[in-house]
Image (cartoon, rainbow, N blue to C red; front, top):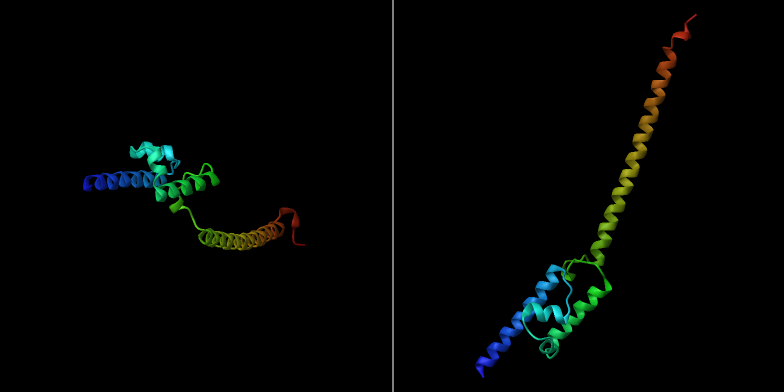
Length: 127
């Protein structure tokens, strides 16, 4: 009886390790990929309620975000994305202000240059 229990725990550990490895790698998490990676049968995975629920959750999450190779645990939260967006908007406002300041400075410099050129033009003689 103890040997069967150890074998069961070892098999579960392999399945959990395969599940986490696939998730971390951003690979598709399906019953087939977990079973193949762990070296267990798909039918056995279906008999394990917690593993089955986790595989179904991860499979559903990856289907909602097709082509996303980032593991679920590493994806940014909505709050984090909002903070990053706010910071980017603030930087954009600062860049817009700096652009305006530099354009005004350039306009003044060009105006002064034009005025100096007119004042020193050869046809302007002081009479």
